[in-house]
Length: 174
Image 1 (tube, rainbow, N blue to C red):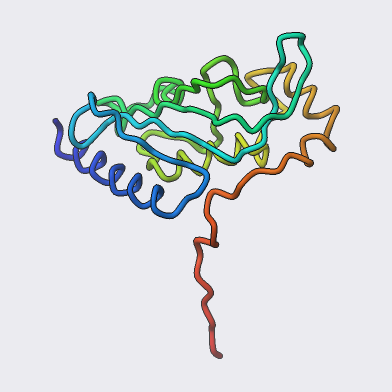
Image 2: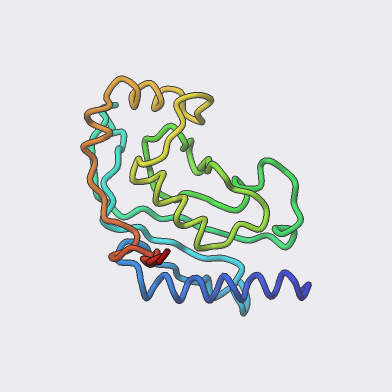
């Protein structure tokens, strides 16, 4: 493997270990078939409330675990293809959201080289309805639902990704 790509995968492994230690709502499991360090992670989000379309077409809230596969292809650090996110992130659960269509998830700010930790933070923001696109969505019907039912969207309650704030307080003396 390319040494820069390998170093990136090693930093992803460190991100996964740290996130598994610190987060109560996201768990990252390296795929044992993808090498060492792993280029593929299975991310399980638990404790998130989100919308799901029922068999009868109704939109209901659920707290079922959300499963996502994150795979860093060999060209991940150098790829300029705007569709890179769709090859990197694959949703294995059913979710009714403007940024989701089938297994594809649209993440604002995603680019080649985005760290694993940042990807999980972006996914958490989307899945917990803190971030969603109403203009140019992947699922226009879900975007209309979100726009027409803001009280339902804002009523969703999800576990925070981090139990304590990540930032530190700095005191400046003048």
